[in-house]
Length: 150
Image 1 (cartoon, one colour):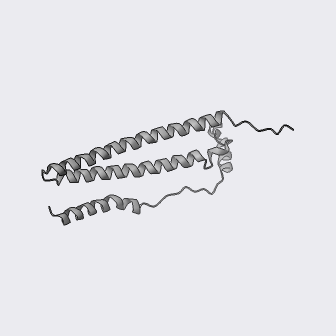
Image 2: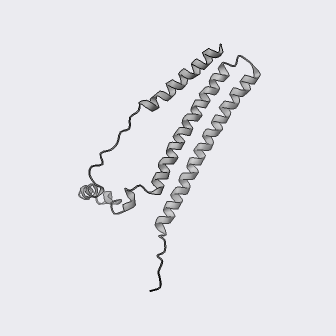
Image 3: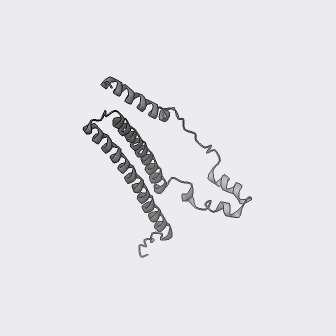
């Protein structure tokens, strides 16, 4: 295969894989009723349904929520990059033409992409575990109030 054909094939695959990212439009919830109005509507339905209504942190954007969203976005990006690299490694493997150097390079690309994917998944599990532990310990042990001695 000619070098130009390989480059155009790779470019076509990248465009085909990345185009849905730019075509998706976000769908946002209607936030017109306030949280208080939503909780008042739940009181007549079920007494257990209003469990989070008295907690002001349940609807706000706390640091834990922001970190969870950021970690999820980073994990999605890393997962997409790993899948793309696995595809690139597969293309390199099929177009190697039996050359040992190209075969070894393709195998390394696939192996490194899989290792990166596993590390990213384990990192996400570890980070969520730590965030949940910190959030649990801070909610069960409120900080001591400082007294001025008056």
